[in-house]
Length: 90
Image 1 (cartoon, rainbow, N blue to C red):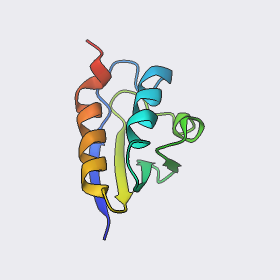
Image 2: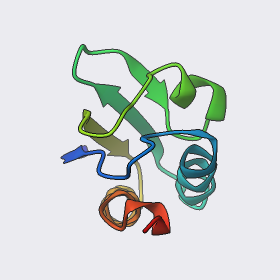
Image 3: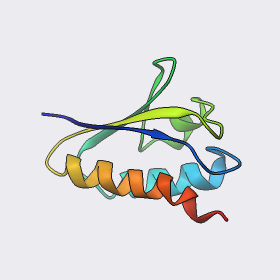
């Protein structure tokens, strides 16, 4: 079984260094394998800052978060909340 969720990047600067670091930190709290896929199908490990940065996610970008493992639902939920909170940016 796998849990997935589609989201839109809403913060002004998109996935720059600070949000990417927050995302990696949050993803790393979970046992499940977590991946992020952009609209063109490129995939990155959500626990790898470098891989996430290569996706070039700007404001308005559509992404899919995919998690597989014992706490996949919690992982997807927590990461979705982080994105929907715009990473705490005003």
